[in-house]
Length: 269
Image: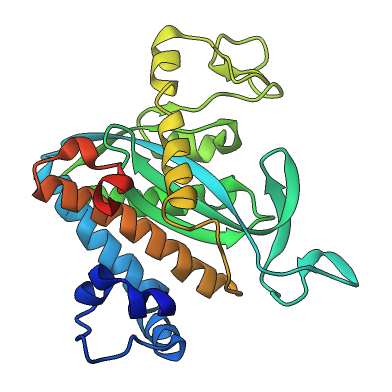
């Protein structure tokens, strides 16, 4: 970033850096991030999301929940293979089909527009169920502020918990093999094929939208390139990526090109 501030004319213009001035050094950028912090970034994103929901006149929203792994910038501790050495907050947890040291971004999105609604951050060893109710309450608050209502929650079997099912009117969450045996309920096999009631299968097909959002955040907005340590710093870094995705949608709507709302390359070329 510091090098780009010296060479990229578009970035210098956005940051109001005059031709005779040098770019901001790394110490200034680090100090800015520390002063903003996780709470203020969350408030900025929440205000943008509420505004976008109001502009779209959303009344009822189908929400998709999922967690995404963020690799820690650290090695394993030599005496404890479950924690980080230079990053004491990092923990070993599931990362796809394997295990790795890092954190998890717990995210909720609008299934129709793929707009991020709320997010939480935790170490990678904590299960999705532990944070699902908090994430759900934050999502309900954002929707309420925009004048919308939560219609249903869509998530994978990691969120299969009676507390979640009781918290909303309708859930589209498959049951794992050890729950509701002998009942005709929604299930998903190891090849991600859905079985069960046709209406729930149709709604469950919206779940891959959050996989696309996580992919955008990692590949287009640099969330996968984590070079900070500590839960708070990792959260700030990831929130910048989420903010970029939200601003991308805002820019697309302001230009009347809603079809480019999830196309970051449109504004980079």
